[in-house]
Image 1 (cartoon, rainbow, N blue to C red):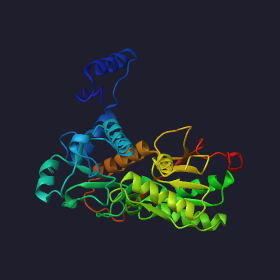
Image 2 (cartoon, rainbow, N blue to C red):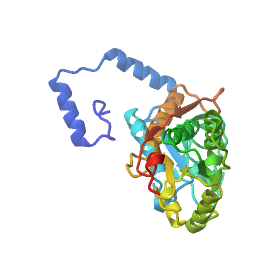
Image 3 (cartoon, helix red, strand yellow):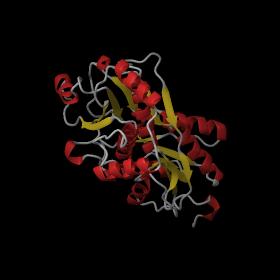
Image 4 (cartoon, helix red, strand yellow):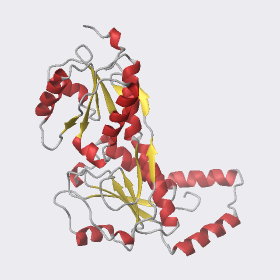
Length: 328
């Protein structure tokens, strides 16, 4: 982009790169320039391609409140810029916006692709004339349109947590997941739990579904602790990063009274065991998939649609020490 003189690169950086290129004798390949020009003519684009990251999880005044959502958006934006695409963020908050208003904000004449960014199924959705755009979804498996999907592999993540809990000596394992996460992923956390229990031959414990929009934190803490005590759990696996605090608010100290693991760590945390989900990478892969659709002039519903899952990375932590080492 710097060698093309793109205005999206800071002037100082652009000049420095151009000076380095001149010093080492770099010359642009005329064959590659010809191919790029031909691609632009074939695609019908006479401007920088534009993609829009749309989500219903944040408000305009609170852009990027959720860490995982900010990582998704940052990954999309980073990869888009590497590929020479403009990238904008569009929150659709409040009451369900009208079709005409969203189309006006998107400006279809200037928008080539849309990334549906991890929509919350319990908040207003989105209804557009999808035939006008290339479309990729991040999570949001529950909603139309049925298009290319990029997501964290929640089934693998749940299985990894169960296997590591057993490795550490735990047998009475419970899983508490957010109801919204279950809906948006088509119950992949639950599926991973059922598969792991069958494979590991460990006692069956009903899944607890945490209700972010219905319960206040104290009510969630009470439900969580009552469930843990009822089933005599040794450890709780949860998609909520606040799991340790919720258990503490309900009167159970971690790891003295009970251990816990988080299924959705955003970064390594020595205090909290669990699985790191690579949200930034998911955003990058979503942008790559969308750019390919734009380049191939694929608009609307791709047939057949494809799904890419990004596996998580296990992280040991103080919240889940080996079972025999926990203090009574």
